[in-house]
Length: 220
Image (cartoon, rainbow, N blue to C red; front, side, top):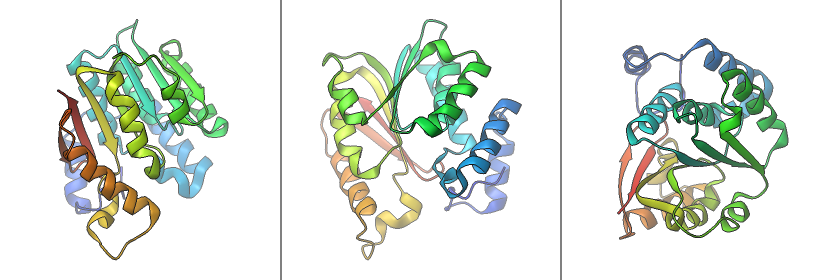
């Protein structure tokens, strides 16, 4: 499955990479196809298949029980995480679109994980701010509006258990983060966010060249 988000890889290397990773299943393929048909140019907002495999394996490896996602879209990433949770695990999904998350809901039902997911429609910053302030999450995923990244991060860190992980998508932004001529709001926000995280003594992090760039952050 071609992935235009892996801009730093040749098509041949990307094909080899996906061929040597656990393959996605028919349900995931259907979701990718429906997202492409239903959302058109917005389909690129969906995470890459290999990123979904990574997130699923990480959820299992960390023994995650409570997770939160900022930006659900049509549900590919939430499906990857929810399937990897134990039966009593829970995933809180935050999004602003009833239309796109309606697709997600159907696939959660088909996968048998709808009972593990709490979808809240509304500004994610408000949803997070309304949660209890104490640590409660083992894993968080940020993949929403880029200008909101720093706010989401600041809301999440206090609510993350020590040793908990935050994954942040699109941190390379098709390479635009190193193009100083690009002063668009999203690019500027991502540069500032990346600088903010690496300077934060509460966490340790590594930026991974998965898809469009994925920062792996661990709370100390």
